[in-house]
Image 1 (cartoon, rainbow, N blue to C red):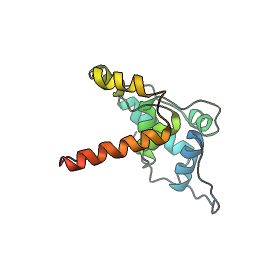
Image 2: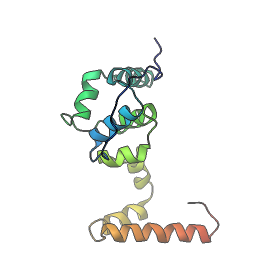
Image 3: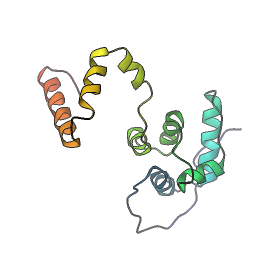
Length: 146
């Protein structure tokens, strides 16, 4: 059976506040798209099963939205991002998860791993932001895209 997100519900929330947690953001995105929990969970269930993973049900989604369960695994978060037309990086960040494959990338790049191990506890958030700007500027000057 195929599911799509064209089945919507109407939700009135003219005074929505910005989401602060992963669960709140999922709920906010779902409501902004006017999707019911059931429709989103059915789409996710079908998508995850098609990819060879375990599915999920509406109670699982409800528990995530209401902070009764921690955020799911990165593959489930990526499926949620697709279903809710959301930025996957934003959802991964809110969940405190890394982009899938990052660990493998660091294993294959010993210098990058050493750099992160050295810098992780020494740099402030502001230092990290400055470093990112410097790297982007260096790439731009070298004619590469960031």
